[in-house]
Length: 458
Image (cartoon, rainbow, N blue to C red; front, side):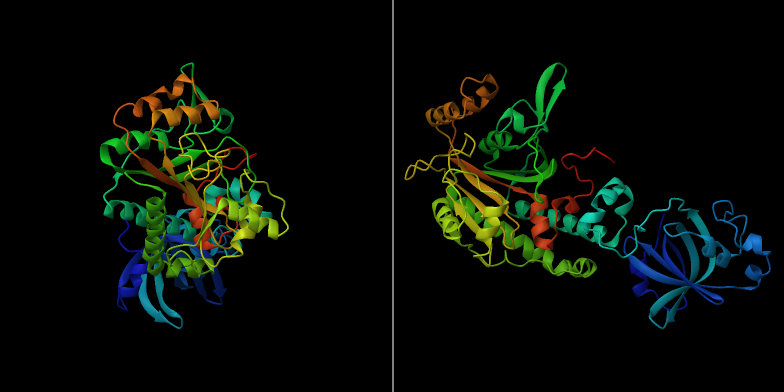
């Protein structure tokens, strides 16, 4: 078992003997000294190998012998020769003594073992310094994603993903939500069948979940505050920078709430999680060469109605009809008018699914709101009041062509048995990360992205 990590060396006194396990990131040969950057999951340390008498006495062909055929046992006592022949990305075990060098602590090596030789000629090298977000490299990097997870910038994004996920879970726990593990396989989509990914399971046509909201509606009548963080799937193709075929969805459902309550809850969630991850993210931001977006800290966020948003777009000279769904172009144009995230309140009933309450003051729209990010990053999440009256639900189902579809009968049954006013919100986790880290595309925020028109690999 590994006992010491690179980061631990900060607290190890000079002269201490250590054993390091990691990967060869880079090396420099200066005369009789070999300087090797050995890295692990916590950082990188320079190890120094001197060309001693044992190394220099062998014949030239032995000294240049590839490590793939020269194991540690075969050339025991020759660390210089081993490391000189070892390729970048090789896994290394190095015994040595901690010393203070010109640029800080380093380890002077006494013995080396090549644990795993790197035989593939990958270009660029996964741990080298290059722009992993460069669109011209995207195809190659995605095909070899299983190697490029080792890149410092990719690692930084995934570390941030971990921190942010933990902060969100903690927020839900602090506010007494119960986590509900909803199913991934479902007989009913939220929107039209064609927008979901369909499967045949034992001759039964089912879908990969688009949204766990229906299942949280059931659970909220038991626990009153519930949430789920899990995968969702999109069958409707999109080539935008903010869409994936498979993504992670943060969903919550609450009893006894209205639209105003939901807006305030979301603002608290975002503000709190940003404030929590910010002091933990210095190394991550340094690796990425960016700064964490702090625009979500100051609440409440500004609000405009959907009707006002349409008017603003017209003033900007953009053609947009009331009742349409706003896309990236419209949301980016509106976001330039704000210095913080902002709400678009009252999304038209024509574009929202049937479970959402219609606004009785303006029956063209629903009791919903979308939160739009700064910087042109588009919609982050949506909140909605849910219909709890059966007659209202039936009217909306007829409007959406769902009435009489027996797959939805159990949702109707919920309205017959003590259903209460309730509502919820849903946010694409990758969109949240992309906005906070200023990343060009959501595919770079998830370990193994599933994008449209790409073979699923690895």
